[in-house]
Length: 378
Image (tube, rainbow, N blue to C red; front, side):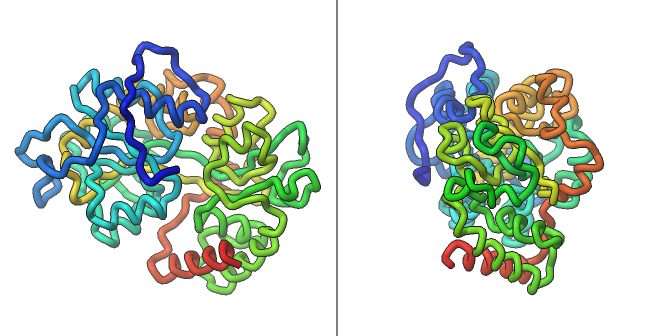
């Protein structure tokens, strides 16, 4: 996708909810009632040195940078209707793409959605401002698991947007019930028509788990062994790509390492798509709302965070994107088939094999980055 997507059309907020994620990718962009078009503004708002919302009134604008295909059609127009704040909504496809934009200091975004392992990188680089909890009363709606999480205890810098697992999405008609783990990449029907995620820690996890290693290992030799395994696996793949929904729904890709929510939304569009958590295990992840240090409208960013943490808004988001919700207050309003699906909300014994991606420190993260470069270029 282009580096930025600007939207000029409006969407009727009373239109029926659409759950097909490939349609969300365009419809949610259109769903910006009175959304802004053009360069991100650069003034007003912000926070004081303590992270408290400054005593300045933001102009009614919000610049939001989110993953492609990762929002409900009603989220942004609903926020605009309640607050009068116009939203400029741009998209990225990988954490690396997003990090480069925010680190440049020229992006002008008020809210971005990094994954949990990238939050620590942002904090080490001093790219974020702490949240003013007094401005987010709906923080009380979060499940305790996401309040006590190791990546940001107490939600000092972040609030979870959605969570999920990494697993395998596949064509049921082509691969049947043979997809139970990473050996599925060896199936004849999958050869040349499979993919793995274009994210270093997620992609490397396949090699580590397949070789019996911890996906959060700090052992340089294990990381190198995993890279060599993936170089061999690469010969069987069709692509390394994080945008898997359309390839899965069209049948172009028959087997893909995928984020669970992407797999479920692909299945909504084409019921031939199945999803399984590999027998070797996988990773849990959380994507997070954070406010860049130089956000021009930090006050409005806090208002949006509080809006998303409302029970109805949180449920609508989960129902649309098909990811797990961190919002306890939203649970009674979430589709029952989603809430009761163990692939979305795995039981405790399976969660034990789905750890969060840990912060391993700059030196070890560099090992993963180098190994991933070896995989992609080798």
